Image (cartoon, rainbow, N blue to C red; front, side):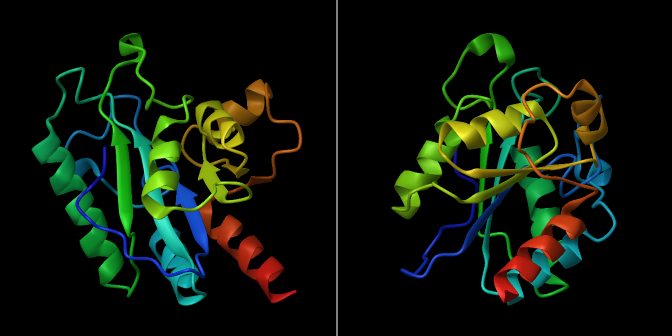
Length: 193
């Protein structure tokens, strides 16, 4: 499903896709159920702003099964995302699209990561191939969804990332960074070369 923001992007698209919980904001095994529980990871808002300033467009692709579990509703999710957008806007940054899966794992939908449905949806809406597009996540589900569309996965240790690294399954060749700030520094340094 598409979030509130529409996308009007030009031909020279530099896109970075981010998972939300554990990449942009602190994660919780009890889910982020309200705007008060949404707390940005130190430096993540600044990292997004720096990427924007370098010409990158940011999209967020996130599983939000708390909706199917009855922990919060779509209106609450919209308020959480509004807080994220406001917090970022105060620094001059923009997330241009938020796509989310509201389903539970047992629903077996095509949009819940590791299924690549949301990434296919983003690709169709932007009319851009996902091949080589950076996708920053903190779980194997993120990596698998990215790889399914030919993207370039990056894993962060923030959120559930430390557990993902410790498990070590399916991470061959995937660059691992401490957090979104470190990924942004890497991508910006590569772009300067």
